[in-house]
Image 1 (cartoon, helix red, strand yellow):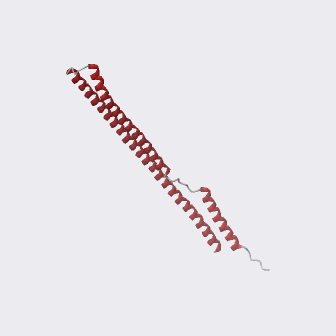
Image 2: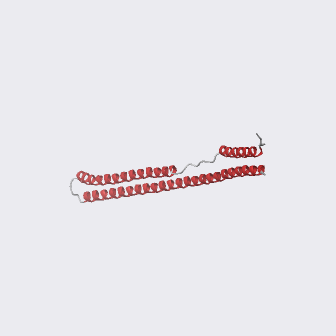
Image 3: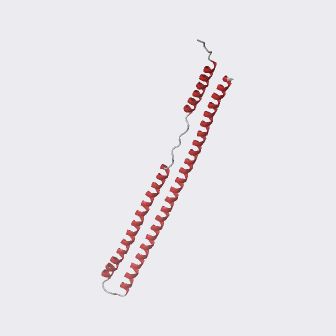
Length: 173
C-alpha cells in the first residue's frame, strides 16, 4: 500500500510539473504573439505618421508655389502698369517694384523653410514614438525544459526515497 502511495505521489508531482511547464509555455507563446501584433501596429502607426507628414510637405510645397506665382504675377502687373503709364525712368520703376516683391519672395521662402523644419521635427517625433512603443514591449521568457527535468527528477527521487524508507527492514537491537 505504501509503495502505491509513494508511486502515486511521485506520479502526481511529475504530472503537475509537466502541466505547469505546458501552461507556462502556452502563456509565453501568447505573449510572443501579442508582442508581434504590437510591433505590427507600431509599424503601421509610424507609416501613418510619415504619410501625414509627407502630405503636409506636399501641401507646403504647393502653397509656396502658389504664393511665388501670385507674387510674380503681381510684380509683372505693377511693372507693366508703371511702364505703360510712362511714369519715369523704366529701370528705376523695375528696380523699385522688383525690390518690393523680392521681399515677398523672401517671406514666402522663409515661411516654407519654417514649415520644412517643423515637418522634419515631426518625423523625428514619429520615429521616437515608435521607438518608445517598441521599448515598452516586455520580453518573453519561455519556461525551461531543464527546470522541468529537474522537477521530474526531484519528484522521482523523493518517491524513491519514500519507497526505501517505507520498505526498509526494521532492525531490532
